Image (cartoon, rainbow, N blue to C red):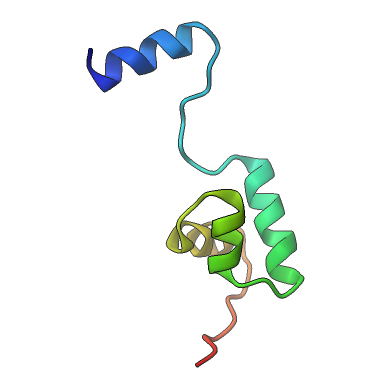
Length: 69
């Protein structure tokens, strides 16, 4: 069975199979980043890649801190 077919069966049964960040995930990421968490740590906590976290933060107007060497 293809991945698409499985996703369609799950969707018909009300299972959310989307892999993007939900608004609640973004809000949590913004809060944690404001608390000083690194994007890598936030990603590990929420189950997303570091780049996904940074992109979501930027999209929502969060100023990204410079990297710590």
